[in-house]
Image (cartoon, rainbow, N blue to C red; front, side, top):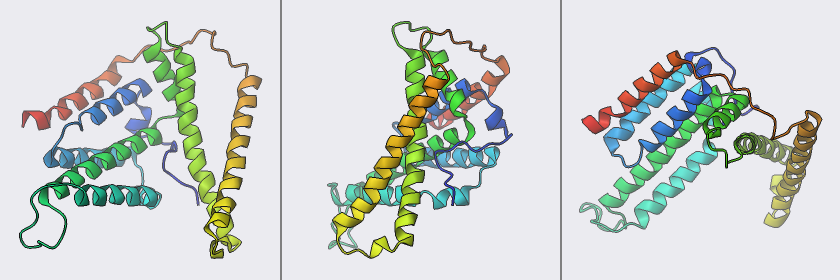
Length: 250
């Protein structure tokens, strides 16, 4: 079964047609607006994130299925926060080693990280890798001392290989499960059955990508032909900035 997270999902929604540079600025804006924050601000961002997924016409239920691992990770952070935080305990549950401040801080931390992850998934779902490369190259072009084209390519390849790594891990896990590899009692042998094929596939992907760049004549000294930023695409960005200021005004 194909995974949806950290992949570009083709579509013709307004978010898909939005300029990649504006989408990158929007992602940075919503991320920084989450620090510092409160429960009401997080609820406000959750509402807008749901609106963003509905606008992009992305099915949330299949994507939630692929976020099982990240859900367990957030749950671990929440439990770690509430059990290792100091503060006033619950009067009705004096035997429970958790306090109100720990629960509040744990909820804030996990909710904030969940929103950051959700916004990142929305960005990768509506932005082509080429758009991301062009956006980063455009932003770094005024800084001549920074190799913008190389940095943009590195960021794009990192996202690509990360999503590919997750897909391959799922494929290897299903292959091992089909061969009854999960019934092995030795945990080292089970880890070996997962790690070695995954490592081999990752190295082959890197090698194929290197040959593909060489075959296409990739050079960093070539001029980048970037289109100017469309003025109408800035209007939704200004609207987003105004919306992000609402919790601070309240």
